[in-house]
Image (cartoon, rainbow, N blue to C red; front, side):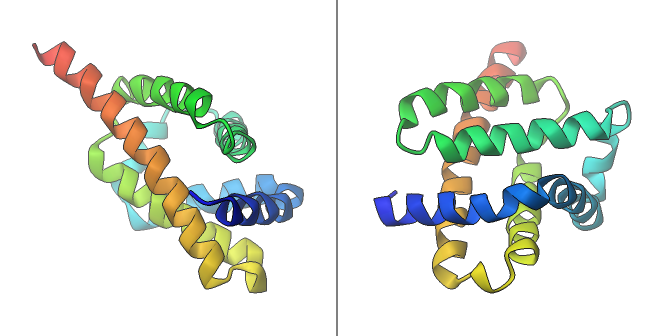
Length: 143
């Protein structure tokens, strides 16, 4: 990820922060619309707290783009925890679609092709780390 993309992500995230809770609510609404199989994963979840967790991890990711080593460890831990939640590999694709759509809605004109490409790249990187960590846990459990 080049520094121009990092700055673009940080700048666009700063525009989301004032509407963060609303954006998180819209994100989950969109996720459940495009992938109803994700809804049962949250049946016993306090969605107010879940929205805060989503915003927290996104904030950590955005602020840690210059320290990918530490960020990778945090994201790996998150992926390992998701192994126990019933998350399937395809859910990561749905989350990515919902996240990018939510950012597009929230950012309006600031959602440029460059911003979209940068966010797609960072989500791809993070979801890949999570998927690998989750699969490693699932493989150990199955063995």
